[in-house]
Image 1 (tube, one colour):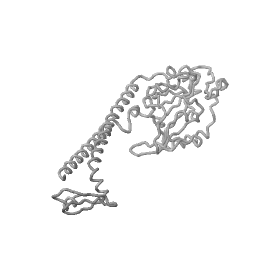
Image 2 (cartoon, helix red, strand yellow; image 1 turned 30 degrees about the horizontal axis):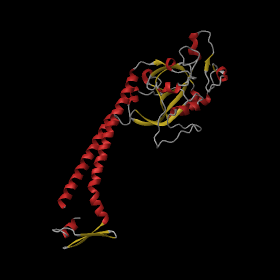
Image 3 (cartoon, helix red, strand yellow; image 1 turned 90 degrees about the vertical axis):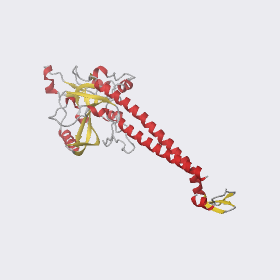
Image 4 (spheres, helix red, strand yellow; image 1 turned 90 degrees about the horizontal axis):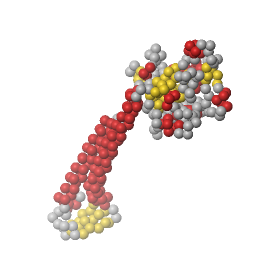
Length: 330
């Protein structure tokens, strides 16, 4: 356009036409040609800058709304995590309850106390998941094990899936070898009575000891303090779980429950380190603070909003300068 202005300066354009791909301008002083595509870009450049300014301003505002929503979610989780743990037997709905799924979902992020016996032979390993150990990043897995009920008042009444925490790869291999060499405990028997009812799960019952105080010699009862959670939402880059081959990349509670013979609406609890035994480092339970962390925190949303607003101001300024320059050329 600068060349065109120089050649036809001082007089109005009296004639123009489109010849193939060239836009031809002429007046009594001469003739000028420019590619039609450059003319379209020149005419639309200010409009494009204005639309970019509007779009980036909208993205900045969206990030502010996302920040407010994220703050509400974090506050909700913090309030639940600050509550005292409750016995899982007092809040867990009956297996026959038609609204059990909704009731379990309403318990998410509540601390619960569970007691029972781990069925190590049914453990599921989810991963690989990396963790920094003594400043060195190491690959490992989360180990999920069914916590089975026994005939004790404090025990859970139906099985619960427990994410016991992170273990290194070597720990998993060693655990698998131990299970292959182990024989079932003579005091663990499946309840044929419950199987006859058509249930999809079974219980480990404790043979009645002569003295109730001898329970520890029969079974190693465990007390778990954890947080009720739900299934994970995998990203598009994560492979699908393959239950047949035993490869689990993310937590899918119904699928894991089916794989270990439990109902699909089984309660899933992630153990926290409030009562972790330092002498037994693995599995390493999660820290409670991880439940209020997001990959994108509210401060990050604020930073993104400021970035978009800055881009909006810059593109709007450019559009204004282009319009002013266009008016001067006319």
